[in-house]
Length: 172
Ligand SMILES: CC(C)(COP(=O)(O)OP(=O)(O)OC[C@H]1O[C@@H](n2cnc3c(N)ncnc32)[C@H](O)[C@@H]1OP(=O)(O)O)[C@@H](O)C(=O)NCCC(=O)NCCS
Image 1 (tube, rainbow, N blue to C red):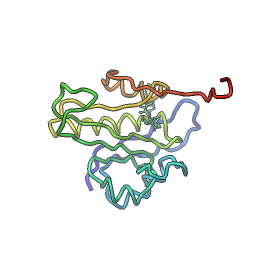
Image 2: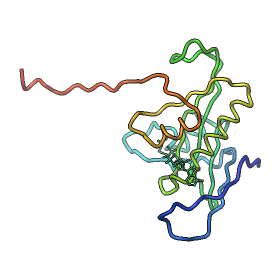
Image 3: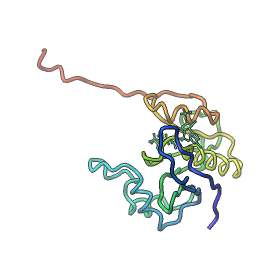
Image 4: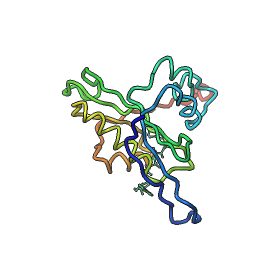
């Protein structure tokens, strides 16, 4: 299996001294889907979320455009991306594009550079296919993701809006 990048997970300043773990970033194969779901969040009220359901991942997604990070033989993060041969609705001047559909790193492994390396590899892979415009998305409360994306050259393009309606019938 092709390993794209290996690195050592760096210890953060406040963490106790211990042997650094070696991290591998590699393409996903079908047997990884259970491990991918295990490192994602589980919400019993959203069973349709493909990333939390290995069966849906296998049926609907498949391993293409999927990279994972492994540390000590455990899956600790993944990135899922795709090339689209159509105009993005959110930037119609562009004819075809790549999109980061999901980036996720297990909480205990945040801040070690894993998200950055997953993203760098996904971008490199899309660029290698000739993709010139790559998009990703997050919300403005996700400061960590925003910082990571902006560090890698992504710039804000479009804001989507959450709308709220309060039940005010009692006041009528
Ligand atoms: C957003 C997310 C993917 C970031 O992953 P991560 O692995 O923590 O990101 P990184 O470690 O690469 O970068 C975060 C910080 O670690 C630092 N860092 C980078 N390389 C490092 C290294 N080798 N050693 C130590 N720290 C490092 C970065 O400088 C960065 O710090 P900064 O924010 O102060 O600049 C992760 O928080 C996550 O999975 N969140 C939940 C899902 C999510 O929000 N997904 C994305 C948007 S939908």
